[in-house]
Image: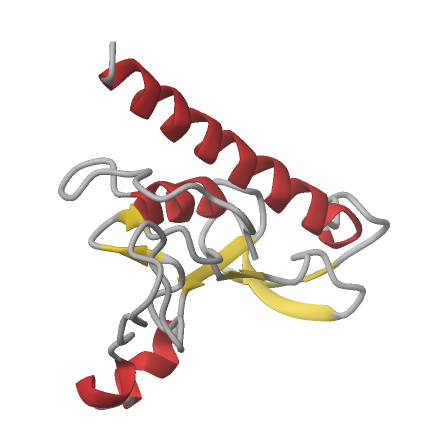
Length: 148
């Protein structure tokens, strides 16, 4: 969850904020999934249930009772919390024999010996936070430079 993100970051066509967040997260080693807002659960909902209905009141700040959009509408931040989930795959080296093929294309077996591929999980939260911060900083700089 990204708290206190200013509204207006992102672009409506190219450089959408959620697309850039997804690109950044999916560039992290071992990441195999990214969803924001209600994600894939939203595909099971009706539009009437999924739509975030704006609350009346302070017109200078967007708010809604729900946040199925994950704080991003049309590629642009709303000012509400940005919510996304990142999924990591398990490490590939396992200490069990498993089928494979050799250089000649013949069926063979392989068994892992030692740990040769790093496990990102102990550092996953810090890495995801850092990547999200880079994306937000990039969009903040773009927004500020557009005003020059």
